[in-house]
Length: 283
Image 1: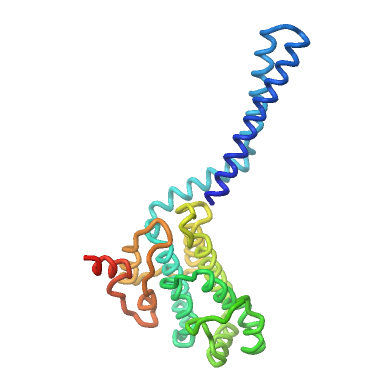
Image 2: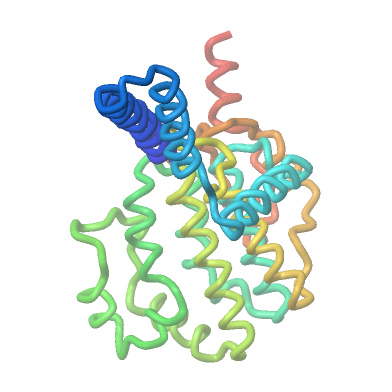
């Protein structure tokens, strides 16, 4: 995001410099032809103003879009997740996914393996490994595979995955049955929220990313909440879990913590994050 912003600024600056050069050259040509100094300045100024306006002109649609983005970003500041780390934002989205399972009264034990893998994002140091694996856990991919072998062979991962991400044949079969048994609306909602989670992680994991930019995790949190609210699904209400997440303050990805105890699978709240543990160790 920063690179893109700087690239745009450099392009604008280069355009302005070229405008100045064009105005100077045009002015000298006119001066040479007419020998009139006042005409030189007026023409040069007019040319410079024209090119400057062309460079900075924005279409009405573009202006409206940028205005809407700024208004949305201002609303984000009032959101409870605005100041928390990228890991905590991802954890909040997983809680939203669990609310979908609870709303449709699904058996959490049959979704255990999926949730365990999703929650690993809160403590893994290899974000892209998590992204590569979870991108193959969506309903469309799992439900369309004939068996576990086909799913293993067609996965996007390039290297052998660690045990914490492996799904055995029985676990795969259970998850596939659950996906195939989902009502159409539940299937659609779950896909959308899983997409929001994956996009939020890929947009916000790097320390180089601009916090709370138009394409940041906050955007996907709002999208997930809109989907949930539109379909009558409650937002996360576990006060203890939310209190823990809201305490994970960080402008970027943030320090790791074990988020699985926040899940409805365990209903336990971790006593401290790794950052708190490190501070205590130093003291």
